[in-house]
Length: 171
Length: 426
Image (cartoon, rainbow over all chains, first blue to last red; front, top):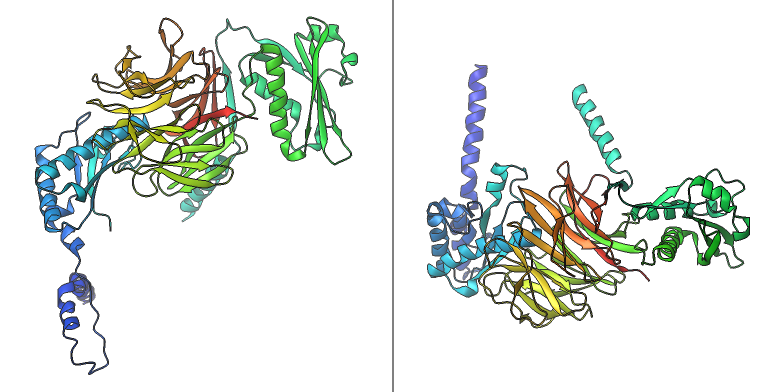
């Protein structure tokens, strides 16, 4: 009996969780706002959620933003091509969106030289986006060098994690 | 629960320990080095000051790597006038020089520190000098006294009354710190949640140029440290970094990425249109002007790995400067123009190295620490300040330009990087 109650609570909790995304869906709420001709009837004001392109960015391959590089390498590996291609598609569908590609390096060596190496990684991704048809004005390649490590360790695993370029969509 | 409490106690204990004062450990190497033995008595009257002038001056001179401090505590009564000095006694203690002094209150509430410098070997007075001070200037005054002693004996300028800048990372917070050369009197000129790198002093010591990521990209700022007025001087598309002042303070060499790769540009020091200085197929960065303003030394990987090159300050053909090893970066020219300091990688270790610019181009490793970064010279060219790594944390270190004197400065708890030695104080 006890076990059953616990199971029911769990099920209810799970149902609540899976229900949450629905309440945030923007399109369903957006309709009433446009039919505002007749004036208020019930006194209730329907809320509008602005359509959010970022929701698309949270899903599928677009949720992937990092392109990893080999040691001393500035070449986008084939395995990351689908990621760059997906983002190129999104950027072309949203030509008003500015995009910053942030290059990063591991911690070894001069901070300024690493900044320049990170820039090369960012530029490699930017060049590929340009080739895929994204406009120059939409893109900015910058570098954080070794200043913003994703992994803070001091071994090869951490260093590999930090040799990357991130595609960032600033608001 | 109890175990957690015990853990917490250890953490608190560690934190309180970490908050301790800045500490300098000096290690003098090289048995062949001739150290000048000097005694400095305590100065009667200095008890009224927050620090003992004589002790600060002794530490300064010892740190220079040129002096050996002879114990003066046995002298009684303590001499304060040249006529009271018994040369034979001081010779017996092994001193070649002696500084004596006193702190005398004046009518206006100010104090006067008077010092006599004696040549013990020559049984003569070398000279006397005095500084007026208020108690809050005790440390600065002691550094000035040490500078006087240093200069009168070695005929070279001292570097004790100078400032250094560095970046301190504490958790997620970055501070641009200005401190005395010995890490004392630390003050934060800028606090940020985003990284700060590459601070460089203007030739007059009133401004710092640096790279701040506060706007989520590297931009170059000029910051008047005593008025806290800041100007964004380089905000080109892409990355803006590696500022270097021309000796007249009117131009900054910077690294911009307008063509895609990092290249050198010159901009007016108060901001303005960039003018391109290099056009290579590789990375060009970390520019630094020679003291005569005629050349710019910089790091470039145009030949494969990063090496140091030189161009005329207005741009032009590049000449390669470093040849040994596969990774030489972060050049700095000594203020006397004779030596180039840089970071050299060998077998995975990053160490401070120097190259003789005056003749021969001899390259020499100076340090045996690892992960060395950002060398910069003392205004008198005798010492090199740099950052190194101890136990996974950045600390400040100094090495004499001949490699004989090595010292480490630990500032409690924090992660220190990007030091820059300021110009001669006034």
